[in-house]
Figure 1 (cartoon, rainbow, N blue to C red):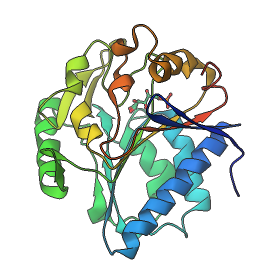
Figure 2: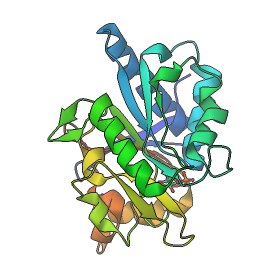
Figure 3: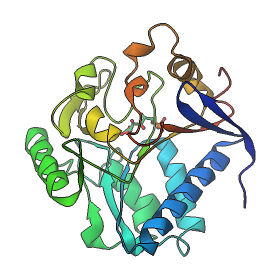
Figure 4: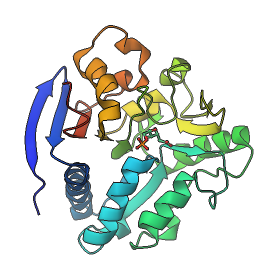
Length: 253
Ligand code: 6PG
């Protein structure tokens, strides 16, 4: 089923793909993941993808489970995470836990190809541990690990991954992975850094809902104070960041 494509705008060096509904935007991302995974599969190469947490990816993961379990070469997929909350995997806020329930228990990704961030251990210890994993499990670009695709969301405040507006230095860190703190809840997080994200072959934002419209307008049109929004700094090396949006999120573009 083709999603109800509204329009594709090339604006400010980003590619915008706007759909009627959140599920249509999610389906377009699912189709992109399927296409890219098959391309790598044809060359017998792994497809290294990093996933974000939050409610929007859950919509995508449920769709992948329901409609793509038999069409994506899951055995060639190697799964990493963009960020994790520092809670056990059984906790309601665990990104790994959410991904397991909505995707991993329904599709045949090999256990050996799943690289969760361990939210249950000391944050500084896990940040070093995950840095080591990325160092050893991924090819490099400009000295940073290179993913084939990174799936990002964006908060109402323009944060992405767990890089928040009060901690922009994580965008330019020499580290691949760092500890971060949510500014409202003070919850500790582990996050990929901006430079790591920006080395990916594809950076895909899936953003839905009217609450994202103001931040998105600032970022896409480089309106005043866009520099204070972490998502403004995200782009991929080989192609501009791809924004998959529903009409509500895109209403002010
Ligand atoms: C996380 C995500 C975070 C998320 C945004 C948007 O762990 O929460 O990585 O960056 O993508 O907060 O979240 P929603 O999709 O729930 O709006």
